[in-house]
Length: 116
Image 1 (cartoon, rainbow, N blue to C red):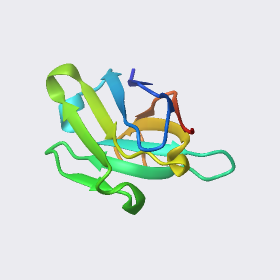
Image 2: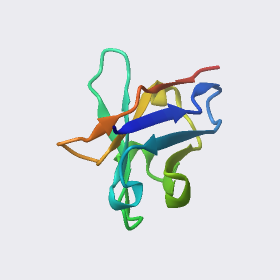
Image 3: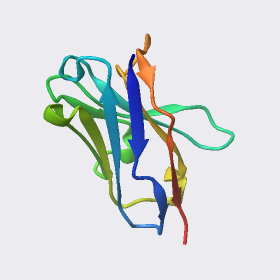
């Protein structure tokens, strides 16, 4: 059974940093891409970043240069390092596999709030 569990969210001031983790199980982690998504209140879910099985990364334009996605295949875990956070980054952040439909699984989400 595919499982993804996010953690690391919280309340941070503008300009601050957070590191989200996505711990996975139930599938061959090193064979699949991992995507990070977010959904703000009243808005549609959007893709934030994706890391392929060969560590190729892509980012949504608004987070380029501020967010970094990575993976540790030995730990079946993906990460999203978020620096220079802005209030508009406030959302529930999810990880999923792979990065596009059809998805094999989603996490439950972790809340990120950027506010002074």
